[in-house]
Length: 406
Image 1 (cartoon, helix red, strand yellow):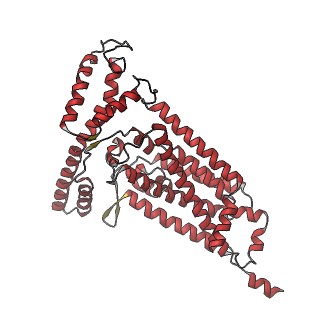
Image 2 (image 1 turned 30 degrees about the vertical axis):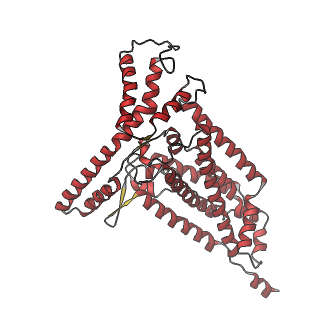
Image 3 (image 1 turned 120 degrees about the vertical axis):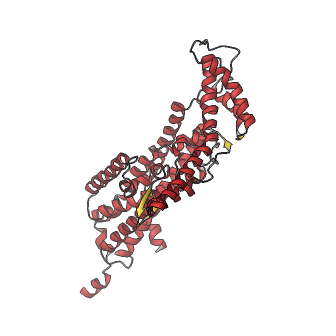
């Protein structure tokens, strides 16, 4: 079976056209990431002595690390005079002021505000916000217990345990991580490449009528179908993992830093209500696993549709339409309160921050289960069912029948 899987993988996915698309899509992804850096980061202004890039990293040496009262006092001592001098908007707009860091008072204030004051204030105050959530959850649990609302009591208890003890004691640069975690363009490239790669898995043999010959081969029939399923699974996983890794490499190379990856995931503001208490780097690994699962389920759906056709054009159009329907519905329901519309759509696993970035529960038999846990469970179940359907709907090997007809 191993040799058969290897043969199917090489035959289907080591074609020049697929390898060429891999290279082209990878370059497009890297250029897109670099464009994100140049377009949105204020640190992409060069390496001049008065550039934000240079000054930021000089100041960063002083403020990064453990957040202490001394660091906060030093930062406010530098920031407060700038805030007061520019508050009434009458300060000089000269860009070559020798008494400033960047050459301009407003630019000095904005630099400190964006990259130091605002994030440090958020980091320092997060523990208080988390404590307020845990206190409220504990109060709610007690109240619901008195009223006999068992599910609500369990949900409040789950929230309490998720948020208890959350803190961000370390200050670190998190702009690169923020853009990385909110980057979705590579998902489109992954789906396009996977669709192109697997559409001919069954169709190519039907077009040449090789499927008939395979039925009389000892390795034909369902044995070949199983090899195809496993080869496609391997291709889907490798493609998804490659673009997850490429995204990280692209952002690290563009922003020229690894800073921030050890911060807790809730150090990113739009992950303040995250349902997981892990570091950003651990989240990167978990996100890659989620994407593999989502791509695999969608890929199995494509494979099931394509196995009934003898020409690639129509199943390609159907699979593309199915993909677009999943994407549109997933994007439309991403931030809604209709939790089931999210957990039932495998595309949600690809944009997994809508699941992991918020603390939301689904009532499963009276127990609160986090939406991402339900989504993973449903997707794996559906994916296995689709794979089983592909296997059992494939024609059985009938080489014994051929011998009897001679």
